[in-house]
Length: 74
Image 1 (cartoon, rainbow, N blue to C red):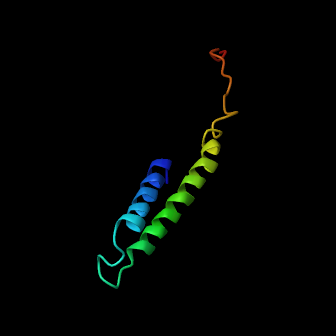
Image 2 (tube, helix red, strand yellow; image 1 turned 90 degrees about the vertical axis):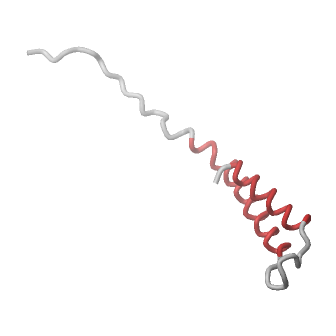
Image 3 (cartoon, rainbow, N blue to C red; image 1 turned 180 degrees about the vertical axis):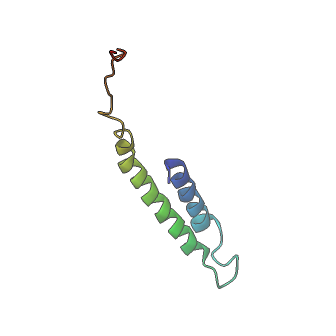
């Protein structure tokens, strides 16, 4: 999950938590709890994206090989 998706989940969770009445879909679905879950998932996603982002760039270090363009001797 990237930073953009995480921010989307944070925004969606905040809308569900603070902008919508909790009983808009009836008593069976608590939109404030669903919003809180989305906000937690978005926050964890942002933290993991920031922590794991520097590791992605290190995968190709040290893989440079030196090749010479000398044809084989016959």
